[in-house]
Length: 288
Image (cartoon, rainbow, N blue to C red; front, side, top):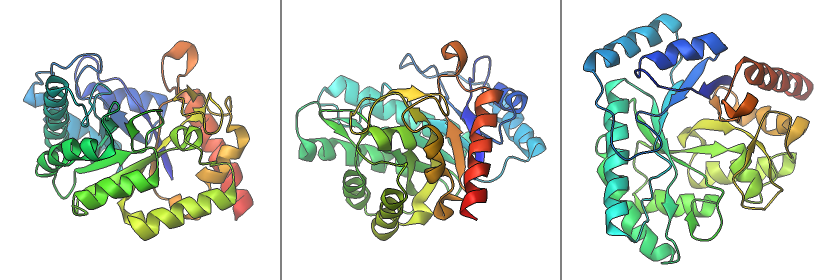
């Protein structure tokens, strides 16, 4: 397992790698546009070339560069305007990600907002198929497990499998698992038996080769609360026992990205990366 962080792309997409290097990250996750508005960023193509060159210089391994789609996106939205904007935003994120040779685009599926799972799937599948056509052998599309209540889709492996099968198990469709989202959705990632069962389920029904990235976040809300509240490493409900998840043999070798609040909610920093690496090392050593 190697550790990265969500890093700001302010000032140009090529600037993210320098910021990742400064904080000591081995991998990087970024937004390809402002996360607070629908309008896509008009990137200078020269920044794409600069990004790829810098990645080569830093020797970031395969899997180590991902983009995260806008949180505004809702591929199950009953509202036609929001649905159209969501599809266009996800498509744009994939286009930019392919241009920089990113390894994946990670996204939250969204919520049917009370319309029902079946109605939601009817909206989601055409949107996913549209974006999957843009994927390359290198750049995949990854569904992230969600944490919300109500009509949120993707809170369970069952729901991810439903979407995976509905897209005919597309060869470049995978998943990203988030420790906080698992925990607040009722999956106790501090329990060895629970983690064993989770990964066995993923392997049997989706395939562990489709698990391409991890989000490593402590949880600021209780088990099963369905409240998406991230905490800094070691400061939330998972605490030291996040090491159960981090040290699992089936997860080694994967890129693990921090999305923690950091100091004064400024995001991941060198100290958070130090803490998660030390936690991983303690538990891997003990397990070994």
